[in-house]
Length: 414
Picture 1: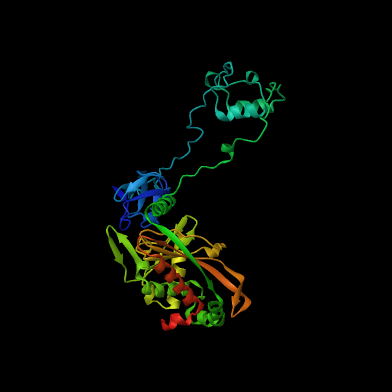
Picture 2: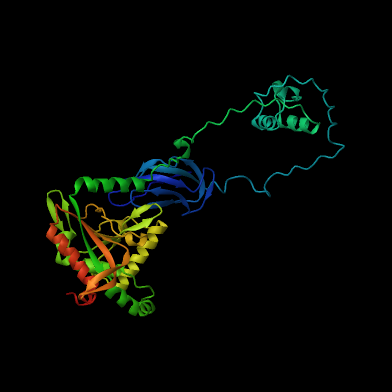
């Protein structure tokens, strides 16, 4: 009985996927819950498993095919593995006949004269040998049908002695100058994720009134606090203390003070979010994804660090779910991990704000009337000017700066 394997429900607003890879081919034996193929959506990659054991029959949707939810991917012949070829014990045995009972061998037929050699109709193996050894095909005795030269004919001819080679045709001179650029290019089809990233980012540029404001943060206090407490933090919570938890908590404090930065446009309405689901941009081999840390305002520093670490691991392994990539209210992007000193991050629609973190660099700063070397970071807020006024955007970034430069504010919520 053939069982249909269909495209599963892929999550809210996801109606189509692309067959990225088949792990099995037609005729392979499959077990229950064994992965058959990978589907790539505009957000995640999802594996489809076998619902029954058997043999993979027809693959209905080859790699690269766009398939809607509910479409048939392949057929599994349930129980076909058990009903396959008979086992050795069940196979009928054929006993060799004795010499007395065996019929007398027929006399060998008289050799027939070989037909004229026909290299063009010969097999590729024979033609390859003739070309490699630069042989004259007219001198090779052909035993194949209609004068075709077999590989054995060429091998026998070579072993019988030296052959007169066919004069090699003069090779055309190599063209002078550089090779065409097309010979040095590689064309690769865009993945669905990459196409979606391109579409959404361009849509953000075309739709939102994006503007970016900058500031710089003195990281001395946070780095000192981290150096003093990182060992105790790791012993207590089993993970290292990074900078992202400070920025997440600082952004939540600023969002509470300036709710427009946590809002979005829906038609002709402004929707103000009274919860704080912070997206954290993660670079993966497949492209940029933004998993969401839910209710970040209710999490302590350890829970924030643990959540970010878990989302990052799942993103790199391609194990994020649709729910973990949906519904963020604000995004943080850390280009500093790649060495970026300054950039203008692009909004993640329909959100109205994104914070860009950058590389920490020692710079001379005037502190108390004296020039001192301090670890400084440029921060950038890109915002949708349709929702957020310049005053609110600047105030938001200043608030984040104050929380990072004086982290006790985060503990006392002042």
